[in-house]
Image (cartoon, rainbow, N blue to C red):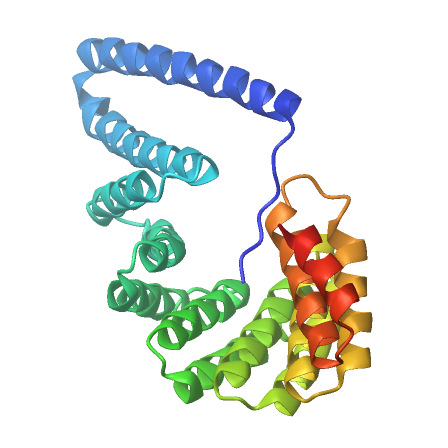
Length: 288
C-alpha cells in the first residue's frame, strides 16, 4: 500500500521558487568552476569530480520532481541515469543504493516487476555493508515482498515482509514502515483466502500506524480491509462497523473520493448479504 498526500498550492509555489533558485546557483557554480580550472589547472581533477557529483545529484532531484508529478516513466529514466552517473564516482555507494531502492515502486507501477525486485536486491546488497542502514534494508525487503506479491508468490512475499519487520524493529522511528509491512502481509494472506490471519495483520498495521504517525488515509485503509475480511467470514455487523470507521477517517480528506466510494460500495455489499436491500441500494448510490 502506498498512499500519497496532495500538496497544498502554496507549498507547490514555494517548491518552484526553490527549484529555480537552485538552478541559478548550479549555473553560477559551474561558471566559477570554469574560472578556477583556468586559473589553477592543478585543481581541475577535484573540480571535475565535484561537477560529476553535482550532475548526478541533479538527475536524482529530477527523478524526485517527476515522482511528485506522478510521471513514472520519467522517474525511471532519471533515477536510472542518476544510478549510472553515481556508479562512475567513487564513494557514492549509498547514493547508488538509494537510486536502486527508489526505482522499486515506479518499476512495479509500469509492470516491470522482476526488474523492480532485481533493483531492490542490488540495493539491499549495498545497504548490508553500510552501518546504520537498517531502515533502508527493511524497506528493501518490503519492496521485494511487493514484487513477489504482484507475481502471485504470496508465501515468499510474506517471508520478505517478516524479514523487513524484523530489521525495522531494530531501527527507531520506523513504526509507519512497520505498519506498511503488516498491511502488505494482510493483503497477501487475503489473496490466499486466509481471512482470520489477514485480519490479525491489519489490526497490527493499524496499531503501528497509530503509534508511528500513520496518516488518516492509511488507518482508513486498515479499517476498510478489516471490513472486507469480516464480510468474507459472514460477520456482517462487524464489517459495517469497520467500514464506518474507514469512511469517518477519509471523508474529510481531499482527493479520497475513490476510497469513500469503496467504503459505501462495501457497506452496500454487507447490507445486501444481510438482505437489507433498501439500505444496500442507498449505499450503492452513494458509491457512484
